[in-house]
Image (cartoon, rainbow, N blue to C red):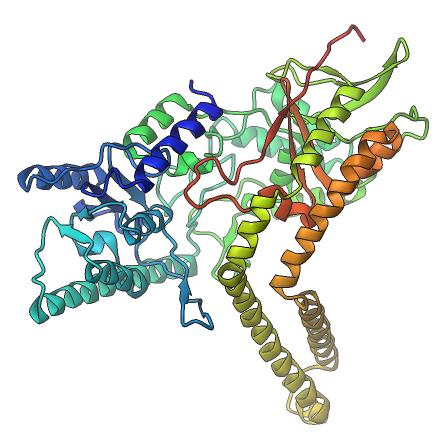
Length: 578
């Protein structure tokens, strides 16, 4: 497998070739599949790919022989995304520049390349494969007017008034079809939920056979779950005891694959088939958190979520446990919410600060006067680094803090993007403030109405005295919450960016202090910056607290496939006998 450094180097070279104009006489081919219209044969990316390649050969068009991870393979772009979805928000700059958002990541990147004239054009099966909304359609038309050669396999638009009308008609019908399909899907889901059918996956203990009309009981897992409820109702079993007992009975959660990364979500169909082939579903043992979710899920008493997210009687599955037993379990669980405290802890730094990839905490200890951290991992944990020296961990964390500081190039990029990106964020903030203001006025009007017409509301029977007081208290609480939200949004986005730069400068000073500090002082600094530190083999991964997120995520280039990833820094570990 190629290293990330090699991949990034290859991409940088390819990007330089593209920008230099090496592919100005070549085309890209674009295909899109919509999951909201599965019965349409045009949704098959393989079908679109064959049609586009055949068209290129017939018309002697050169398709760029480039492969960019997460974008294209041999010049063929395959995207799985609804072309109907679009962002309604836009910003008009003082110079007349209109900034809009494009939902499809690969289409957005394609537009960026074409608008700069880095490729001669793009080959698409038909109009509704490249656009089904007015915003994206307008961008495609602007590219055509700029001289970009957009070829449609199933249609030919003349460069005159008739051709323009033909294209507008195709866009209108494509958008109408998408809107109609979306409405039908929404109405169907709403209707079946009204009937008490289960439109989502059933939890463990039931079988998901692709049928919302009936979710049968799992003959292997259902009896164990029922017995778990019976044991929990006695009040003598903790969640950990129940999890241990269930695992001894051979109980496992429903088999599932690990969550796909962002790059894996952008895979082509061929690569996606390889992913599903090489990433089998795994049935994991239940944990005490899993037991808690099972014991508190009302699905097991024959209920399902309705249209208003409330629990309604289900017609798609039968109850596994009796409602009386379920309520006994809830009462027993409420009595077990007791934390265990250990007063005699060894006073060593970094306690509870770092986790192993299996989720276990690294606990500090000393051996021969040297401070170590040790993790008692699970049996199947792949991490071999069970023990690490505290001074080497501190050194690795110090390197991370130094990497969080903005470079001069990044500061220049932030300044360059402030006029557009920050304008978009400020616009979104203003939209949110307007929404809060409208809701505040409505709540105040309702409170004023109740205050003026209390006697009439009570006499008419519209409210009981208790209900009227409850409604007034609810509106008052909502008003206080809205005022808090308004105060939280008071700072402008441009000010936030200035604060992020100032924070970067402060962290630069903190890095110097960190190197000179003692272990206990270093721990205070680390807890102030990081929300999560994880050791895996000989690498340290991290997540910053919310205030430092801007420094963690940085402002990576839009086309850089290595951007928006959590950096990982090497840690040299030692494993002495404990």
